[in-house]
Image (cartoon, rainbow, N blue to C red):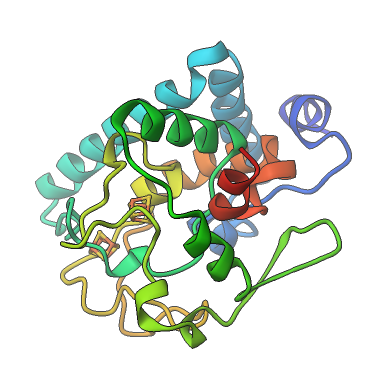
Length: 228
Ligand code: SF4
Ligand code: SF4
């Protein structure tokens, strides 16, 4: 076992599996394994060194990384993501976050007077299949809910995210090209017409952080907020 993989086993995996995110899930087998473990270790080390401010730190780092990657792609003639505040078709499915992100969101709502509709969160969770640990299995009947319950609890009446400043990593890293028309999945299934922008750089970061927070990330944002 290489040094970086050994470090990941000791400090992140601790006997568990990687929670592989995004493009890395598709390309894991094609990338030299030493590169995969080196990049994951770099992301995990940076995050773990962030102390109490690590959630804000990683949010800022991801935002900056996206700006840099978009600028790089622009120079090569590739399109920028269509995504912007108020574009919210993707905000109609299960949302994941770490327990630290959930706490930051909860505190932000308290400070800014944003009410969290706990009843809606409870109703939404009835359409999310879980295992005996209350981890989401990946199976949902999300679109069997009444239409008014399918949107994220943080969307306002105009369809704008009310917690944009503290929104979770997944909401920052989920990017689409060209249009928002096909961004709304159906019961967890992605619309085949959707064109995602999947930066491998972000895949490493989210894979490392999801794996560090394995015990909370699959609980979903709704369940984590209801526990606070
Ligand atoms: S993923 Fe789609 S719906 Fe979400 S912000 Fe981007 S373009 Fe808009
Ligand atoms: S937290 Fe904001 S960006 Fe994320 S799904 Fe909810 S409304 Fe959309």
